[in-house]
Length: 307
Image 1 (cartoon, rainbow, N blue to C red):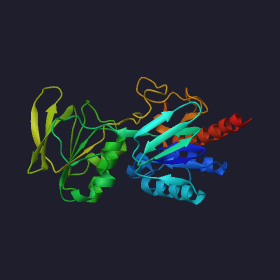
Image 2: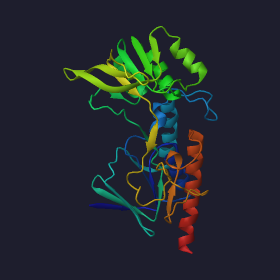
Image 3: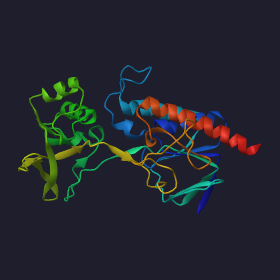
Image 4: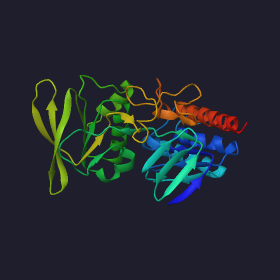
């Protein structure tokens, strides 16, 4: 197996990971950024970002492309679509295995972020998605179901309307929607949209290999109905991407990293950054802050080992 040794590994290429890589490179460290998908993380699926300083309004994917350009400008080595097969977090050496290569470094920043929570139904289908921006285009003129009542669900619903879907149904298991009132008004005010509260998806129907209907159940009465749909977009929140280190790193009861003020963890040389950390707020700006602190702390830790 090929081996690559560096000063610091950044695992995760969202805002926290890319910021950490930029700061590490500026500190003249040999840094490798590993991303299991493409850089940008969940921000890529954000239709409009309106709270990132210097950009009153910008598409999430565009913002992440600009951040990636900065990473490339710094000369950071980036490996995308990297399949992690193993992770070792020793006190003296950290190693990430995958794709026929092992990356080794004394320090690592875990910026693995979160992943969408899937819809818990017994029947599988290919027409179930977590990102309207990524997967919405084929549904122009078709019927879609949006599952979830928060800001993400309603924002993505608006994006689907802009794409030209014929019908859109949004369902929420609780007795109210949680999205901002203005966003609710914009979505539910469109004549193509129907909204149902206290409603959950319990299964789907597949005909000739394609989704044909979603089975909805009233959470109060138990009554079930079959809603004809061509695609389902699920926005039920996210869970932490911790499968590679959940048995090694100290985590909270929900699986998020318990990092200190300097983003350090219970293992020397291991730092957490971004949405994977236990924290009250998860924003692009807080992820950037975490990445900054983690890289600076890692640099200091690496220097202290050489004294």
